[in-house]
Length: 162
Image (cartoon, rainbow, N blue to C red; front, side, top):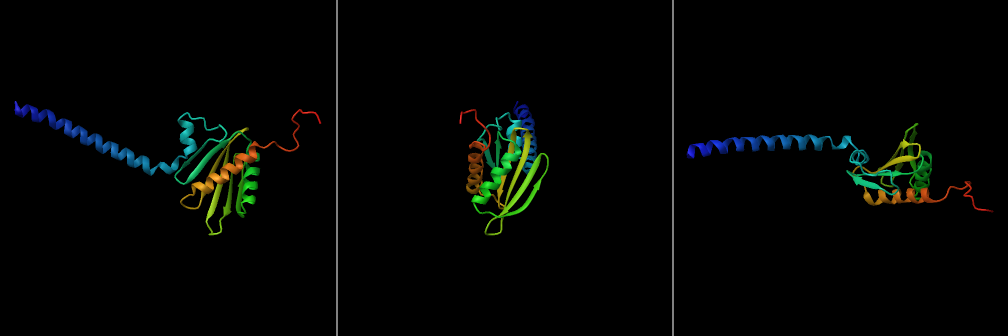
């Protein structure tokens, strides 16, 4: 009887070791591929409302946000914020659906800002400050962009009588 009890326990132990090994491998692979997906992609795949104004995620040194505004307006807001904060622009590349702007801090590190057109009226924004990231400066930039996008656009009539 003791012999049967030993046999029934042993396969469970082997199975639990295999499960642990498979879980460890999956976690290791997932951790090594973590840089392949941006938080905005993960949030979109999870069904979160990323396109809501003011929604942002800070993960792995990068702040991701989305704005209910065309990419051109978001780029104008980014340039305005960075001019106000006195960060000199060191690089700019603008394409149809994406743009990259780099600015230089006084210590020589780079602030990289990327935009991605999700639709004609929704634009994703990615901000990375330096190599490790800086959540305070990233949020300062994001809040400045958000403030500029909520102000009325000059030259557009609102329907009010003059």
